[in-house]
Each structure stands twice: as structure tokens, then as C-alpha cells.
Image (cartoon, rainbow, N blue to C red; front, side, top):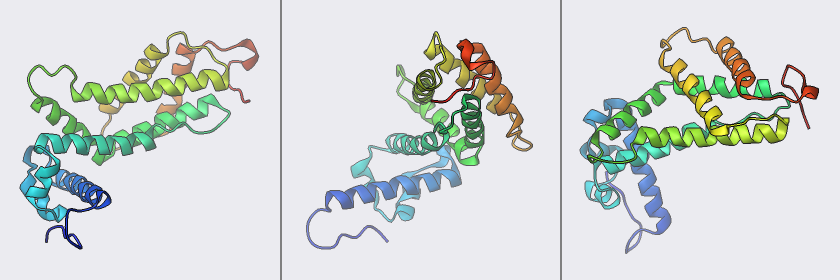
Length: 217
């Protein structure tokens, strides 16, 4: 079964967008089954209920399609993983952020995203100046930097070098996650300890806030 259009002529812009979304979603399902190495347009067509001609009209090939799939999945992951909890306690806010990051980045689907990043980087044109992994890291770094700027406004703390502090946060978090076993992950103790030491390391706290780094407005 392939895509059907009701009425004569080309599909409307809404219909075209729906077809593209269906292809991207079907591609993710195929990717989860076979991995990027065995991913082909032939496998996608029946799952997406779209002809190969329709797929190639929207994507130049496998690499272009998988780059779109990666952008879509990263957007979903980042929205959930990088929300800062609305609380008057900075320790709780960043502990929750670290905990959700650990949970998100150890999910099987996210591990597939990690494989996909490696595959795309290995298949980029020689001499590409901006590898995909660097781009993904840059998006994460930008979001964490925003949270730190927000923290300075909301909790009246001082961070001398926000970009370096954001890199410090991410590098420690990613390093911890890469070293985790698939089972027996400590969800609560590590995020709390990590956040406490991070805040002590990067934040200057006005005297009136006290050692707990706690304040509300």
C-alpha cells in the first residue's frame, strides 16, 4: 500500500508535511530494528506506506534522511531531558536536571541515537568542518548555558564563565553516563552529589543565601 491522494492534482502542503512526517517516523522504526548500517530506503517504503519515488522526492538519499531523523529525535529528547524544574531550590532544580539526563541518555532509543551520530559522522564528506557529534554537543551546551544564565538571575548567584561551567556540567555528566552499566544505575544518589559539587565549584554565593545555595524570589 502506498500513499493515496484524494482528488486530482498534487497533495496540499499539509498533506505533503504529513507524508514527510510519516516517512521520518517509519525511518526511526526501521532504524530501531536494523540499525544505521542496514538501513535502506527499500526497507522504509512499505513501513511508511510511501513509494521510493515519494521518499526520494523529499530526501536525496540515506544520509539526508537519517540526518533528518536524527534532528527529529534529538529535538524530542532535548525537550524532555533539558527542562529546568520550577522550584525555589537550585540544588533540587539541577539535581532533577541531572537525574532526567541520566535516565534519558541511558534509554535504549537514545543509545540508538548515539550509534546514528557515529554512523553519520563516518559517512560525511571528507573534510566536513562540523561533525554531527559536535553539533549535538553544541545544542546541549547552548541549552545548559541558558539554564545557568537563568540560575544567575533567579537565585542571585554569580558564575564567572558560563560557557566553561556548561561544558564542565556536560562533560562530567556524559562521562558518567558512558561508564554506566546497562543495569544497576543509581538514579538518586549520584545526581544529587554531582549537583552539589558542581554548584560549589562554579558558583559564587552571596552571604545572605547561605551555604545551602537556596533562595527564592
